[in-house]
Length: 414
Image (cartoon, rainbow, N blue to C red; front, side):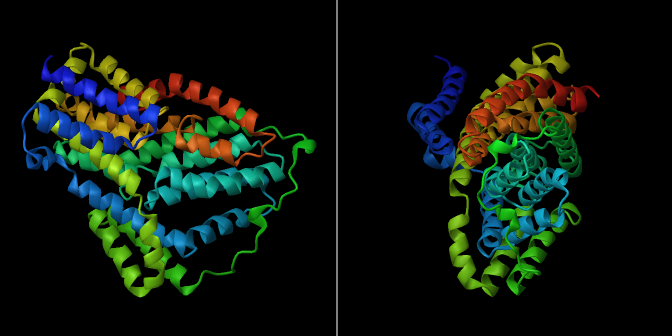
């Protein structure tokens, strides 16, 4: 059996076993790196580990540590509660506040599921109390998380930029963020049209206390003010000054740790080690495939489709459909290098193609089979949960069918 086929089958097995057995995809990918690279091909461990993404590792650890500090010291809770409380009686504005807060959290270093886990419970409880469809509130949180994830200071933004820089493919960080944000904003508007204009029947209301009515502090404490300044500095430093995201986030996090050591000790537990392992493991295995020329072969197969626009559409559908059932970070970590040979051909603009793939792979995170969708279902009141699940099922099927084409048309064809 040729090495190209073995390498691709091993990658497929990693995705399959992760989905069936629930094991960390990165751990499985590192095992595949060992079995394929060391045992089957006779490479040394140092040789197969040469593709370990050190810069990506630094970004993931640093930004999740900084966000962990903000979560532990109450800065995140304060932001969310004040933002929701600020809209007062304007019930229709609250879902858009949820969108903005989830986007802000992901843009400043939160993993998408972490942001949804924070915002969705508050949003769903508020929605039910005010007779708004909880499915709509949950979708706004998920769409907001996707909208903020591709900021240069965001986790997915860091993954994409690291993968492209390694392959010497320039992409505009500002355009990537703006494009994916606008796409998810449009999807949020569609969710409002579909789910946001009706009101629930009075008998389904819950009597539980609405968490958004908790009286937040009128102003943040000293530690929270400093943390807010650090989060703002991360966004400005990476977007305006073009400073390295990983080193800047680590510098800010360590500075906060020196000022507030008790908080930092608790925040080290908030570092997203499963995400770090997942992404770094996948990228290490794909780097082995690149070194063996397998990625180039696959890229040529995609290019051999003949029509560059059709090839781009195929890539978007692969990213969108697979991401609905598997980890978005893992999918992007694999597909960005796999798309590199096609992008290097110059047949399609790099920034447009990357925006289309990023949008297609993240908008499907509302599927009930993804972490974000499952969080929305889990936070719905028990009597409404079947309806929320069914709604997300249909919504997920719809975006899987339509979103890749929409992203392709918006960013590649246009």
